[in-house]
Amino acid sequence: LMYQLVADYQEAVHQQRAQAAHMRLLMLDGSMTGCSPSPSLSLLDGWSDPAGWLKEENLPTRPGYQTITSIGPGALQQLLTTLTTLPAGSNSMASLCIVVDSLSPLFQSHPANQALRFMEELRHHPAVSCILASVQQDVVGAGTCTALQRMASCVVQLGPVSSLQHEVLSKAMRKEAHGVATFAYKSRRAGRMRTETMFYMLQPESGGGDCFQTPPQLAR
Image 1 (tube, one colour):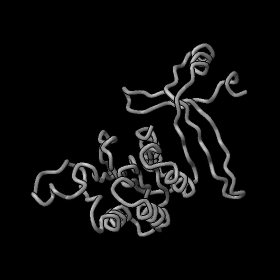
Image 2 (cartoon, rainbow, N blue to C red):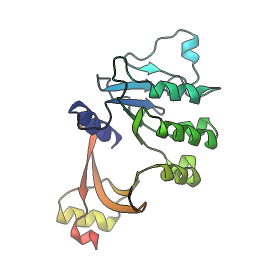
Image 3 (cartoon, rainbow, N blue to C red):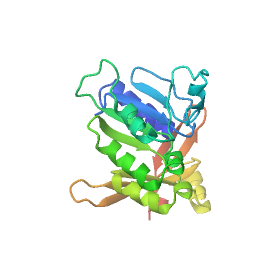
Image 4 (cartoon, helix red, strand yellow):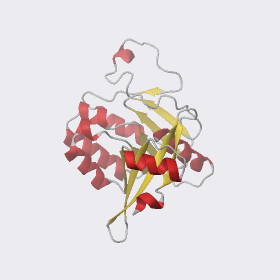
């Protein structure tokens, strides 16, 4: 699903339909190494050499990727600077969409308060228009997830499909769902959250996914 989000937003950037003028993908767990760099997407590799050992030994890095250090003293401040630096030749008023494949390694490598402060600074940076990121609650804990949710304007939680849902979907829509996605949107005016539930189906051949609405039989 993250692959699909990146592809959709990248297309919007290319067509100048997005608020951001460029996307920057930070890879911390290596789950999105299938992405390729492009004029609208730059890639930061923070997982293959997080401590900078390969750099110290002058060993080769992945072509097309900028390898960065994501752990160690001063790493978060350096990471913030690297993420928020506009591409060469960009308009000074341009903004960035920051994508993080997983925040979990960040919270495993740094104290929670430091990692949360980093996310707050990234969120409020003038060069950043939006952030797309995933996190595993069973890794970072419920308290950290709650703190991250307070920062977000939209939260998507993925869950399994029940046997009843699977049966109804097969009969009513002839589709096989791989999971349930619950979207919670924060209203800017009222400050309240509104929710919407959709099913998703993964498409390994294209590296993406397909979301579809809940049929009436399951919406009651």
